[in-house]
Image (cartoon, rainbow, N blue to C red; front, side):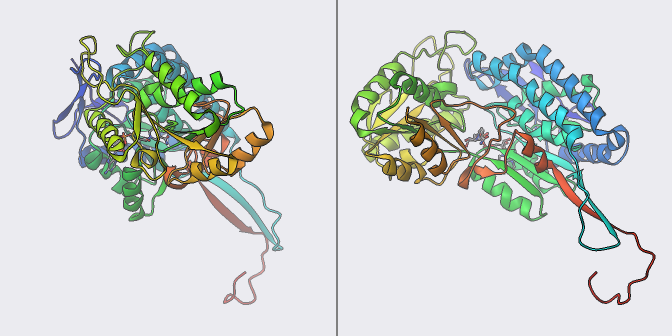
Amino acid sequence: MKTYGHFIDGAYVEPLKGKWIDSFNPYTGEVWARIPQGCADDVDRAVAAASRAMREGPWATMNASARGKLMLRLADLVAANAERLAEVEVRDNGKLMAEMLGQLRYHPEWWRYFGGLADKVEGAVMPIDKPEMFAFTRHEPVGVVGALTAWNSPLIFVAWKCAPAIAAGCSVVVKPSEFASASTLEFAALTKEAGFPDGVFNVVSGYGPEAGSALVDHRDVAKITFTGSDTTGARIYAQAAQSLKRVSLELGGKSPNIVFDDCDIDAALAGVISGIFAATGQTCIAGSRVLVQNSIREAFSQRLAELGRSARKGDPMLPDTNIGPVTTAPQYRKILEYIEIAKAEGARCILGGGPATSPDLPGGQFVEPTIFVDVTPGMRIAREEVFGPVLSILGFEDEAEAVRLANDTLYGLAAGVWTTDIGRALRMSSALKAGTVWVNTYRAVSYMMPFGGMKRSGLGRESGVEAIREYLETKSVWISTTKDVPANPFIMR
Ligand code: NAD
């Protein structure tokens, strides 16, 4: 069994209180590693190292081009270690190797993209309206960044947060999810190998209310960037307000996948399946509310159920597995609870509807892919995030009703639209209140495309050029070019 250390100031160190957390393999149900249980003192140590790196030493004076080159080197190292890191993620979170390896092979592009952007952050000389003044802006790193991540895609979240932060010149302390910290702890060594000065990239593992909360409270942390549930996000937002920290939040969703009767049905079926059963439904962008035009609803639902029934559950390491285990025990219980709630509320189950049990599913944390029809907009299954392979199908008559139902949610992370009518595609992409709208596709992301939520799905954007702004402060510099003393020092200049 592997025992990890925190990664602080360029080295692995033991937790100060000498406590550890067992990390379970969700497929086998067995403990496979121990991660440090960080406390406020561990966080303090990491933040001190990160602050020192910002203040003194090579990072404080390194120019942006040199930062970018280190990031390119890190990208190559991740690419060379993609398979090993993906295996660690699968062992920790039970998602499919095909999915995690795809993410790890794509991960380096964030370091390349933001590494290239590092030396293109430019201030401006203002055509200032006041004579005898020279005025310009500078964009400076915001300071030490605390990054809190979720368990479903640990290293992709590290890339989304840390690549723009480091390109901006910040140093970071990452607190990964206690359910899946190993890959982030392994990744840390690559930052050292790439040549990043000590203290630029630190990882403290541990529980949210202990290590995570200490990071949010720490007075030397300037910015918190968080991926997780809306409940925790709201708590962190309020807590960070005490010290007026900058905050970005990537939260959950109840994303609608909207199927019009003029769509390419086979493509829509594949898109809906990928939206809800990929990653065992454990993705923030899960298309968990499918709105189907009434004229095709019955037939479409039946075909979805057939496809869902053919999905293979099993060992996430095997290439032909479609559905792996649920990552955490609390999440497993929550999914089963929602299935019971849906039944009690009168939704009709046409597929699955309970735990999946068979001798070849050893860990016991498998849920049958589940589809509910006759779902009405007021039901909890239509409103609340389940974060599992549970789909609700609702019907609609026309475009106006589809928009109304789709936007009738507290969330606004993503939406899918299936239609062959280009005019409708454009109308829908404008009417939907979601940070991402996919038309005739689903679950596409890129390092160059902004990603984030509206409403209760979050604050700020990750990826794309504008993401670097989340880690910069603008400073306005005024220089008087006159030797004259102001006539009246008591009035504004
Ligand atoms: P979570 O909110 O329980 O935990 C997220 C992180 O916050 C973890 O590192 C956790 O340890 C930490 N944390 C928990 N309580 C804390 C506290 N009081 N103070 C500080 N930190 C604390 O979320 P999760 O269960 O790990 O992930 C699932 C959720 O994440 C889902 O709601 C999902 O939709 C969301 N998610 C969002 C995105 C996105 O990009 N929008 C991506 C993936 C997951």
